[in-house]
Length: 500
Image (tube, rainbow, N blue to C red):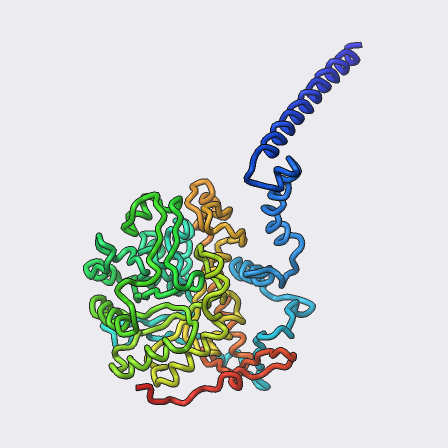
């Protein structure tokens, strides 16, 4: 009897609760209906109250569903699942072998195919990549140990734990880390790695109160033994012709102090250096910074046509090779880690596939190839990408997004919103808790070591002892008709000519 009464009472309570929930649902539906019918901003919601809201929800979730359920391994952009998973396996130190054949469509125009040697060197004959000196004529040249390094990502664009993990990982792997244009923070120095200090158009970290280059600050930076080189950023692949963009929500008190800007306000850099308006002024600035610091100085840019680079090399030969930059970093005009307007991200500048061989050939043609080191940057995150860049003419390869993937980036495409779910590009303390530098720095190091190792495997396969010996004769490029042509036939090495 008691059980029957208890069951009846419970049923009554459940029925009342159900009716209450239905009532609340109906009231909520009615409220949303009235809001949607009376608002004027969204035509779909006004014409289809409540139901029209699902369109926005599906658009928001579409990226998620495409990434995890619908896109094939080789379909996504800017980086597909196969590329990201290779980085993931390398950063975990697990096996990067695959089975049952390639999933890559090898008939796609532009695909690089490496020419394996009939009789490759034995394992004991192969060697590790040798260090290379940058700026041998500087007071303090830099002997760079690795051909693969971390590209420019600012503290501000990246979070504190991300920068700390990259710094410690770079030290572990023996590679350099570029500060990006946001200045040198304690977090860059925390791991003890080699640092390339990037001078952006706003001169963050080395500016005076008026935003001009501060020689005293340059001397302080150069006095730090960890700061090995200085890079003047003329342009980057994410936004050629426009300065850096840091949303106000990311400009914390610490970042404002490091950069020398107001806290909480958007940080928009000039679209170019106000004090560099032509090639002569660029060379003057390089010479000035090299004299102040005693260390190698180069610049980073995006190529859109050969003319400006030809003009620069002509002026260098007129002045003398000692006036040349110690290195040039070429970024691809097909996007990058930074927040940028879509037209610049999509449509401005050459891709690295076109610009790298162009610049390498111009350096050879001018007789300056041995004087100026060439650094390739732009969507080079896997071994094949890096090996292609070295074969094309690069001395060094740098990557930003590859190292972001090694930290755990899931390509959520939230870098510009301060809502990065992995804590890499956000200054939200709650989200940053997910990124623990002590756990992540080894993934950074293993990724770099894994890529270097597999590029060395490619080098041995094509019949040379180490990666920088890979040449254009070792790479074939798939053409529109499906045939492949040697890279050395597409871009034959030019003869040196007098560009004076």
